[in-house]
Each structure stands twice: as structure tokens, then as C-alpha cells.
Image: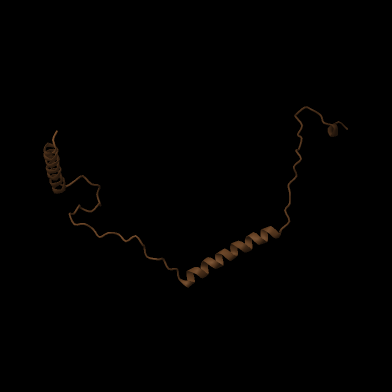
Length: 104
């Protein structure tokens, strides 16, 4: 194919795509309820930097008090001596079998 033929084929494809765009943008699409209608207006671009969140002094004080309470709880539990449970196993006797203690 020569370059003129390629250019004509590309132009034909572009015109078909533009016609398809007009048809699709003019008709309503099936959407879920509650979604806004499509518009041809381009929306404003969203800024990449979001607003900085600011916490009140009262909120910071509540968080600090809660954290101090958690630290105190951990410190209190660390001060207590750790009581280990017995690791020896108890031997239970089966019914009808006499043990040394029951024979005497």
C-alpha cells in the first residue's frame, strides 16, 4: 500500500469513530439508580494536594490521656509477679483399677 492509501484508511476509521462517539454520547446508558447523568462538560481537575487535617487541642488532650492510661495499665501488670501454673500432669485412674492409695 502506498502512503496515500494508508492515510485515507486512517481518515475513514477516524470518521467512523467520531460517528460512534456522537451516537453514544447522545443516548442514555443503563446506569444504576442514584448515579448522576452524564454531561459533556469537563469537570474541574482534582488537586493532588488535599487539605491538611487539623485536630483540636481538646481532641489531642483526650488521646494523650487515653494513651497514658494504657501505659499505666501495662506498667501495673508488669509490676505484679508472674504466677506460673503447675505443669505436672494429673494421673486419673480408670474405673475398677485400684491405685496404691486406694488399696491401703
